[in-house]
Length: 445
Image (cartoon, rainbow, N blue to C red):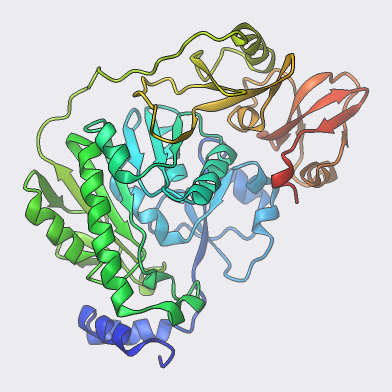
């Protein structure tokens, strides 16, 4: 108890009942909850549990989220982690997307998206339909976001590194659903990151509230009439939670606060949800808002896809690797890279600091086009023309992730996917019974 700042403890006393406060203090010396969320785009919970023995019970916050032991090590070394079959996510962090209630075909904006836990959860709900736009204002964090989007095999996403004001003004009314997981003081993560306790100040918490309100104001512009906006933080402070919502609603009569529609957590202002450690996760707050009016389809948005000299060769490579052009055939060239744009009609992305839109097909190198890792990560066994499927404990998988050559059947020739129990995890080039490794150097272990 003494390790918490007095001002923080005073805040919690006003926020909680006496019994809740005692339980909160008693939980402070316990280990933080840990969890993973199944990426249903690539795998099933049954398959994960068959090969990873330490996966525990379902969390209450998401049907695809499971507890794992707090002291387990090496989760990131699991072949299924390399393959993007799951995302390591603190259990209650999945609450916001559950409340957002994404449906197939939705256009969804995740405005403060890095490192990508909530964006990849949204993508699972979309199941390859609609559009996910994931934005992160900090450049190096945006690159981490992109890496996770690619690892999880997401084909219908746009990743940008744009200021919220600019992005939301340009895309006014475009989205059916918007998530604002706002940067905050992080009080809910004190158990996960004890060092952050020493950095906490009451003044910082209040200044976070001002920034959060500004982000929420921007986000409201991007939402179409009849759409849903979810605001979330990983902090307890009323200055960053209830007060932000109250101030926003006081100047936005077109929005209405509605019930989050979940049974877990503690109700705040009757309709919002606050998660405490006693609920099975670290600290979180979620509020759900709807924009009054009826949703309509805006057909004024389009992306300009111009033919480029390498287009025929790119399509040939696409057909060499996959059947049926499963990601569509809207190809676009950005510098020396060729991408397959999302199937859904896109807005004009010029000036919006877009890092990637859709699936990276290949890279132009001199007179040839080399396929990219991202294309294989988004592909499945059913549509890959050439692959080797390795069992979970095959030693070749570990060597593959190290960047080494691995043995394969002498009949395999050319670009060849590597699967772990049927889940695509990368590729190489096969010749003479050897697969030359193309696993990205930055991902090797």
